Image (cartoon, rainbow, N blue to C red; front, side, top):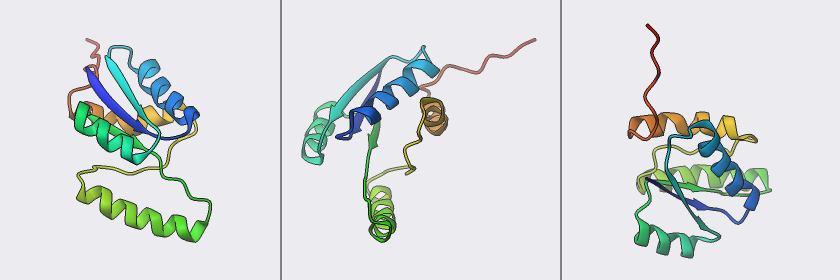
Length: 115
């Protein structure tokens, strides 16, 4: 079972993450834990110890976004994040971003070999 904490107030982003993992690898047993804000996310992270945390950081100001991206990256790496990326617009692209992490930690099905 993979516990995934998704921190977002956007239902479309949550649906995209669910779709990305469920449709692209049906062998995965997933439990999505949604959190609409950071205080709830911290509580749920301490309660469920998720295997993966997906969070959304939004900003409409380009200068603020660039600063936020730099600060968020530094903070996230300090807290143990392995990767930060923009949320893709479709489920397959999101799955491709997550696939190396899932494979590295043994969460994806083994590759099929043909003989």
